[in-house]
Length: 222
Length: 236
Image 1 (cartoon, rainbow over the protein chains, first blue to last red):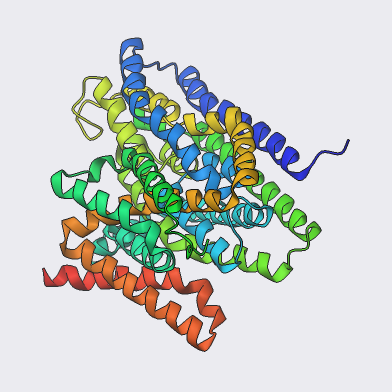
Image 2 (image 1 turned 30 degrees about the horizontal axis):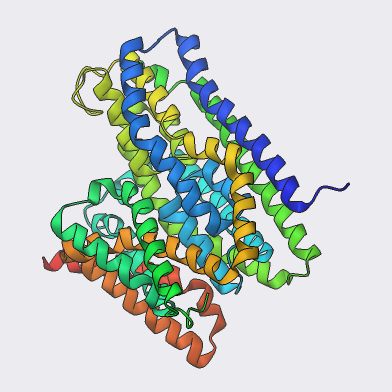
């Protein structure tokens, strides 16, 4: 029996994922052996515990949040290349919108894959250029004139992205927005945004479910 | 030997080069496979090319702060290791937090503390590497199962599934919008400006059928918002 496209992408995704994982471990291993410098065991263990306590739950929740939007093939790619919220998700979501394809369809999966692949290559190239030209560009990028622009890139990105999609499906946006505004009035969450993404996803689904059952979502376009 | 000689040694560049090459090759393979599959199921070439082109254009500006994060990490971690980290899984915020955690685990006050040694560098390297592999690991282990679950849900109630996926998206964007609204000041003005520009562009696209604008609307509204941020900052 011939393998389907989906099966083939799962195999490819797993092989490339495992290769990258091995390499991620190989890099510090080789450097430590080559120069004969090793972190003290206790400090290493302590650091790993500290970081994993936060990032194991966040990372797992991220897969369950983004994989349904992007489809499997694109997910294998974004969890290798990273920069999800600030780059890949807005990028893929907008590309799918332009091409008028939906999540969880084969067309949607294909557009998402094309989008995140093109985005990943672009980012890798820009970081490479940045690294090579680090001396000449450093004063420009860190200049006090440009600082407010780069400090505010996320508000600028999510302003545009939010305006577009909230206008389209405002009914789905009302409850999560109201809840998060309430939370951020009570306490400052700016340093722990990552934790709130799955929490707000859950609240958002719950409110949509109630509205859906009550028959309030007939006008939802997507 | 100073630890920065270790951190900036050619072997780190070579290892990084190989890993990043693997990632780029993977991206190209996925791109090619998806493109071919698209043609098989009858998608228009034009549509797929649009997706690729607009994704490239969009990705340029949000990549620049990653270079800024690189610049921030170089004094302590050298050039090649931050380059490797920022080119693969993780995000600027994660890498900075992880590097700091690694330094703190060594008993230092943080990444920029004095007394940062070769051992501290080794520790930070391991912690930055291990802290963020879990998403990829989850994909390798569970993505197929998740896909099956979604396709069962699709058969049961497709309308609900599309609403559910949209809800996840709105949950995510609310996290980035809400705190900006309550913080006020420059971030809020910036967000409102790019929102207004985006709405204006959407109106022009719909009213006058300016289709090319559709592909650049988000990038342009983001850049205009960022430019205005410089202006707003000069006012406060």
